[in-house]
Image (cartoon, rainbow, N blue to C red; front, side, top):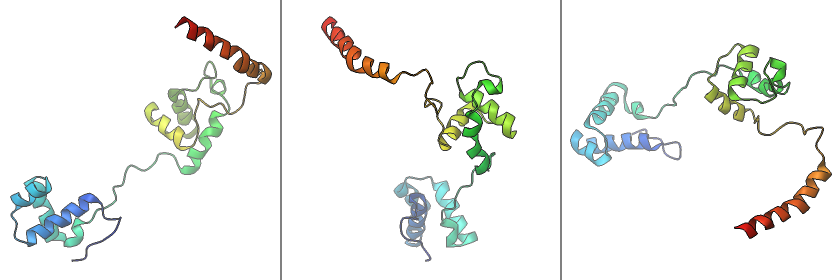
Length: 163
């Protein structure tokens, strides 16, 4: 038997190999199915595959999904496009949403994605709308530090007294 060993052997493939071993020991399809918690029909398909294609028919094969609509190079350009800001693409306000990002991808690359997939695509390229690339120019670091160190602790104490 030309059986692969090691971590590459997935549990479903191992189950098919075990079914073949049990069949060779004289077990019936029903007994094998009950022992491996599968249907009798699955055992029948596996054994038919072995008869027609040999033992290699039991090996796991990589599942190929749909080809990506964007090339890796195009996907890498998405953060650069979004860095121009939402208003540069005709949106009102600088807030980026997945629907807006999908519209920009459609405009720039001619590729349509559902807004739910756009969030996964943005995470894949390391871009999150929650983390601004630049800090606001009006940001006053001293005032923020003063509030955090002096004002916030007082507010916490007042809240604790009320509760």
